[in-house]
Length: 95
Image 1 (cartoon, rainbow, N blue to C red):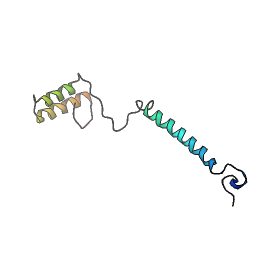
Image 2 (image 1 turned 180 degrees about the vertical axis):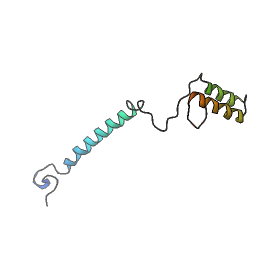
Image 3 (image 1 turned 45 degrees about the vertical axis):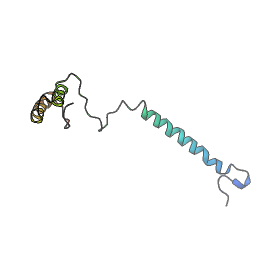
Image 4 (image 1 turned 90 degrees about the horizontal axis):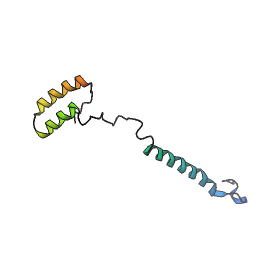
């Protein structure tokens, strides 16, 4: 049985399998490069949290809670009011 393009009769033999592997590596490397550079910033996935600007009321509330100016109950109460006003639906909290 002759395989790999007539290996015994002077064909390329197992080297013929090298070219599809090289092309798969080139195409896979190009896709990986595009995913890491160009396509990264264009889509927002489910892992991305909505960003809060530094001067927003929600960020200011988070800073006040972190510094100890307000307690946890007041933080959650004020955050629920701010979420209703600004339409933010994230459940993790402010800052």
